[in-house]
Length: 240
Image 1 (cartoon, rainbow, N blue to C red):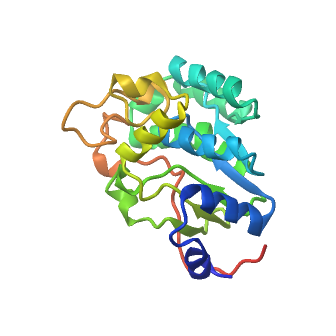
Image 2: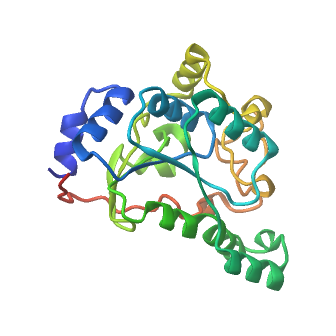
C-alpha cells in the first residue's frame, strides 16, 4: 500500500473511523503528539475514549503556560491514560542558557530556531524514532503554509506516515465537538490564544489578526515555523 492507496482507503471516513482503521492496519508503533490545544484535545478524546493502541506524547519544553499544565492534569484526571513527556537534552539546554542566557531567542531568528531545535525538534525526533504513523491535530485553515499540506503525507525527515484526521475541520467544528463531549480544553483559548506554544513565545491574537500572529510575534511572518512539520510527500510504499 502506498500513500495514495491509504488515502483512498480512508476516504469519506470520520476522524474516529480514520483512527480505528490506522490501528487495525498498522497494529503498533502509532503515535500522537499533543500540545494541549483544543484540536489536540479533540483527538486525545477520540483516542482515549476508544482505548486505541496509539501512544500519546507531548514536548515538555520547560516553558509551557500554567494553563497548559492545568489542561494536562485535567486530561489525565478525565481519561486515566498516560501522556508521555519528552524533555530537552539536559546538557544541550544547560549549554545554550549558560552561553546565551534564558532569552536569547528574542535576539535573532537563528537563536530562536536554535532554542526550538533544543527544546522541541530534538525531543520530537526521539519521540518519533521507530514509529510507523504520526498523528497530529493540524487543520488546513490554521495558516497559509499548512494549506499546502495534505491530510495523509509521507514524512521524509522522520521516515513515517503523517495523518491529520481533522485536517478539513473548521474551528467551529472543533468547538462544537469540545462542547458536545465536554472535553477539557486550555483556558487560554478563552483569552484570545488560538495557537498555544511556549509562554515567552506566544501571545493572544487581536481581532482581525492572522491565526499565527501570536507565535513569535517579533519575527517576520514568513519565518514563523519551528521545524516540527517540515515534510516531503511522495508515493512511499509501506507495509504493516
